[in-house]
Image 1 (tube, rainbow, N blue to C red):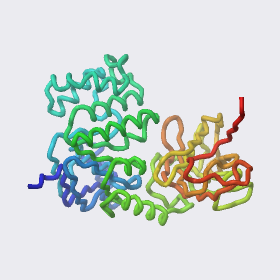
Image 2 (spheres, helix red, strand yellow; image 1 turned 120 degrees about the vertical axis):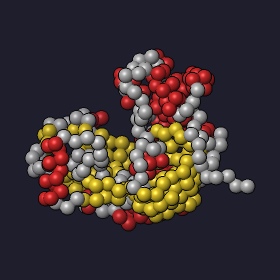
Image 3 (spheres, one colour; image 1 turned 90 degrees about the horizontal axis):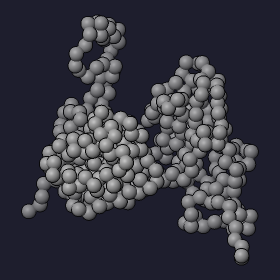
Image 4 (cartoon, helix red, strand yellow; image 1 turned 90 degrees about the vertical axis):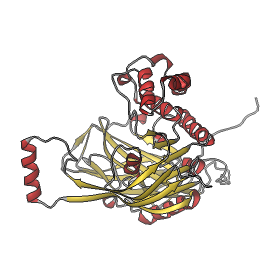
Amino acid sequence: MSRDPAIRVFDLSKHYALGERAGGYQLLSERLSARVRRSAAQRREFWALQDIEFEVEQGETFGVIGHNGAGKSTLLKILSRVTSPTRGGADLNGRVGALLEVGTGFHPELTGAENIYLNGALLGMQRREVARRFDEIVAFAEVERFIDTPVKRYSSGMYLRLAFAVAAHLEPEILIVDEVLSVGDLAFQEKCLGRMQAVAGEGRTVLFVSHNLAAVSALCRRSMLLQRGQKVAEGPTGEVIQRYIRDTRAGMTQHLEERSDREGNGRLRFTTVGFEVAGQPSDVARTGDDLAILLDFETNDGRPLRNASFSISINSVLGERLLNLPTELVGSRFDEIPPRGRLRCVIPRCPLPDGTYWLNLFAHQGGEILDWVQRAVELACSGGDFYGTGQAAPTDHQAVLVDYGWSLV
């Protein structure tokens, strides 16, 4: 007899009224101003999810992919009972451990040790059950020296390591993980992947959301693609990823004003992207030639902006980061930028082998995100003679090229 699925989602939809409070108490002034707004303009409505249906079998690792704003986080918040659906529902058969963002469920005034036991209690575990895994959790998180320190004093990296360790080690039947691999260093990301593989190997269910398509491909046999709150594909992960790549390429534009799937406060926005190769405008980079990436921008209020910082990351089509190019790392400072202008990032002797890549664009000011466009534009690179030997480097040998030399000593 077949077992019931670990997760069954049916007719799941979530509606928001933009510009209105979700509920709770309001001051009289707030009520009056809200009434004026309603009379002055029609209320804007937004469906974050519409008619989502899928099932995840017990012991399966299931991936959810899609652009920013596709509805992934809303889905996971509903599954984790953080928010309720407008219609439809979800049945989850088993205890759920969720890591939706850094430190979800932690109390800042409590120590790391106290938060471990608190999270265990929230999962319905006995204190002795948590104690049995306590040392393993602390060792995984690498916070032994600070385990008796209030977590409000933790760095974001320490917070993340402990949050993931708790979620992954307290033996939930269903583990929900949202974008944990976007934070933390490479060693920690590899530990996370290894732990999720171990959880899946123990017969538990994992629902994994990530922009890192390589990680999704490695972990998940089946996946689902969301676009604008709707399910557009479900099936073998390789096929779903290929659909995602095709749709992304079809929707790409160098005129970024049209892109709505972006994050940030909008005080500055990237508007167009262009390229120059060996000093000449070009749509295709060439291995070994100087590559300039040109970013046009404008501020939202037509005024100059002080102390903005920028970054470009170049990624494989599966989301693996190959190059990260922040202004701070090379000491480039912009004390003030004009209301509209162009940034130039130059990469001498382009180290990318023949292939296709995606660029992510990022701007921030004092730690606050101004604009963040993932998969902003596609960059094609044709092979070239990087080493000056008359030979093009095989594309399957390495992700990027570097100068090196051999000698007999």
